[in-house]
Length: 335
Picture 1: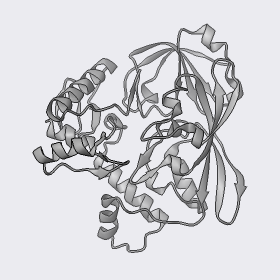
Picture 2: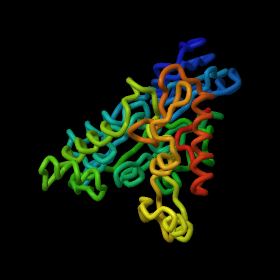
Picture 3: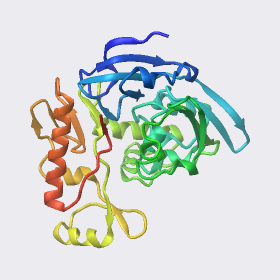
Picture 4: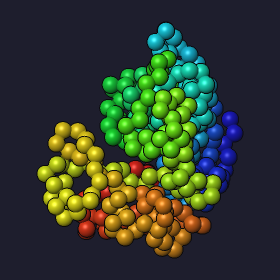
């Protein structure tokens, strides 16, 4: 077992923060985890793709980089297939693999950064689809003693960018594998306006799963900066969900405010619109700013620190609250 000391984490986070860990270990098999880590180090952090995290400049503990790989078909029928995937597998590459195999359901989630292990924590979603629609179960171990667990979709307590892993089980477990049930029959989900627009532009009336995936990739690339060129973690805030009666008051003042029906008597408002109307789109302060094309994306223009990123996010939250009375909740985790 090789534990590295004083390791740079810059290449392991999409914000490109020059963070450093006191200790660093690449976990390639779940059996390599040692509960003694909790006694040996002041703190322990599980790192996946580093695409939804703001790391501290110095982490005085052990960072476990999960690199558990592998794909295994557990069962298969004429209708669907159940696949177990290692937590360290790249999400987008896995989506492309499923399409090559003729397994459907994840095409709308193309090009989402990160790993399989992080996907259920966040209940990742995009363009009308959420992971929870295809997830069967999640496997892993509890950190305190290494005891294995297997938890069903229902037990995961999925919500909008939420799960038991962000609440009751936060910091208590390590996800090793994710089990997904995918259909062998393709049913296109093109309700999202931007997907329809791309397909119409390409004159595609009867899209394949690959067409949907390519459309999503095109949309994301046009709206979101490449982390390799400009450090970011994608959408920094969740789209707020508010009661209809509160929304009606806002609509009277801002007739053009966009919204989407959500759960009973509630609507979802694009956080990017609120941020843009609060004057933050394209605004830069020091080494950080809100992106010029997508106000929902906070970017690192150079050597930004975690404190700078946190400070800007708080200023944006305050501006939106002052103008609209809505509290934005971070989608990105700040350690």
